[in-house]
Image (cartoon, rainbow over all chains, first blue to last red; front, side, top):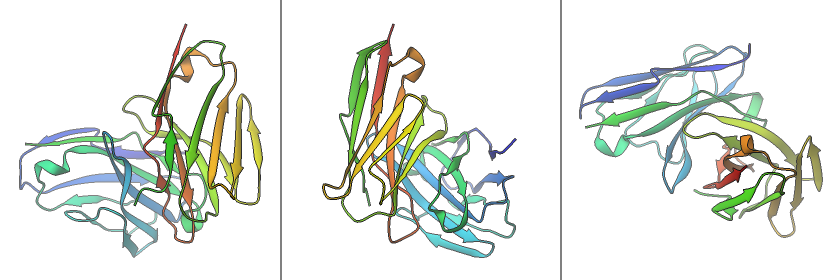
Length: 113
Length: 110
């Protein structure tokens, strides 16, 4: 079954404690991206990757890092989380160039206290 | 940068009625897509319309695109309670990012 998986689904952590949210897709997609969703603000892109070892900033990259060492995985790293990063995070993937329909993961609800 | 802007923000209808949502965007696009999101869950792709298309159908969904007005509409015919969700339009333009609007929340009551 074609899917995007994210882990963990729920995470409560404290300010400053490094964390990683994993994302994996089984569709051999080149393009992957991370979004955060906040009430009243909709979905905003954090980072995206056009292919292995190619990443770029989206609209709200501050406080986040990503890596793309393998085609299927695109982890999101928060080196020093802060309360304003409390949000619902989605990973997505799609075909070349990112201009096709995107497949979304189930979301990770992060709370930073 | 927010590109799409959905209207209305919220819509409540009865089962069997049609639901129409509108999306306006700011810059030229390659395509426009509509997604559905059930509460707190991942987004599901509904339909994609290319900039050279004016109308597209998929089951009970009808999407129109007017590039001269930079607007699109999503019509859901014969709504069901299961259509209750948030609906987002998203555009791709010169860049590669898929830029989402803030969504329309649809409530369908039985």
